[in-house]
Structure formats: C-alpha cells, structure tokens
Length: 102
Image (cartoon, rainbow, N blue to C red; front, side, top):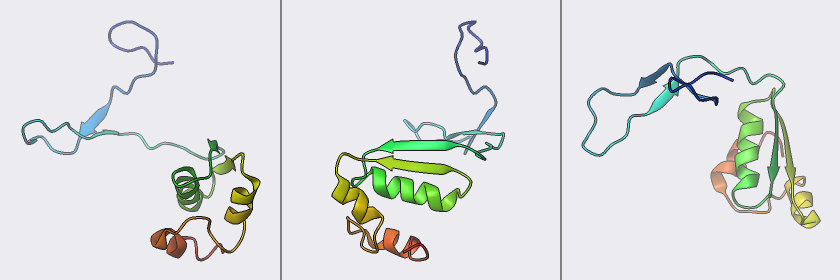
C-alpha cells in the first residue's frame, strides 16, 4: 500500500504526466503512470464470454503473451465456440487479429 498525501491508506498514483499542458475548456488531462508495469506472471479471470468479455480477453491474451487469461461463462456452447475455428460473434478486426491462432 502506498500512502496518499492526505494520510489515509489506499493505492494512489502520485507520479503522473499529462498528455498536454494546454487543454480545451472542460477537457480532463490524460494521466499516465511514468513507471512501466511488469505483467509477467499476471493472471486475469473474466466472467462472461460475450460481446465485451470475449474480445477484450482475446486482445489482452494476444498483446500480452506472458499474462494468463481465463474466461468463464455459464454457457458451455459459447465457450466451445470461442475454442473453435468459428468465433461466436462477428467482429471483422478481431478475426483478423486472431487469424494466427485460429
């Protein structure tokens, strides 16, 4: 746990940079941690293999091969479809990105 400036316990990012110093009225700055994050050995479990969970976890698995990604769903046919050559949803770009794995 890190110690925020107000003295309470909790996680806080104190060293961040903004994308731009001059922002349009009402725009919020983009906050990015300045330190890289080590994801080696990270394990992610997603509940739901539908239109959000399935593609999101597929892209995380492709972009971060050292991360163990597990997707669970109540529908066994949906899980079987993700493990087959035919994706259970139609998303052209996802199909192209995952073509090496199908």
